Image (cartoon, rainbow, N blue to C red; front, side):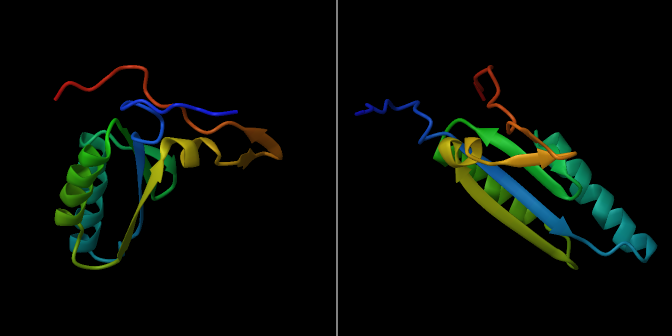
Length: 114
């Protein structure tokens, strides 16, 4: 089966995943953790699992921009990993919860205009 891809195809849209392990032993470390977490939420990321957040972006260019914004806000201690997946790769994710398979999150139905 041959498939024609348009400019807005699933291969252009991306999911940006941010995974992090940040120390929370001191008051400053806790503050850094909460600031980074709140930043991700403000940037439109949703929690997929503890310390794993994801955001759907309509184009690769928006993925580049969002990735740079996240990198600029990484706290000084701990580890942050950023992974970019195509819409097709993300939709092939297998999720097993309570011994039942569930589908991954869907791309948002609303387009971004900013």
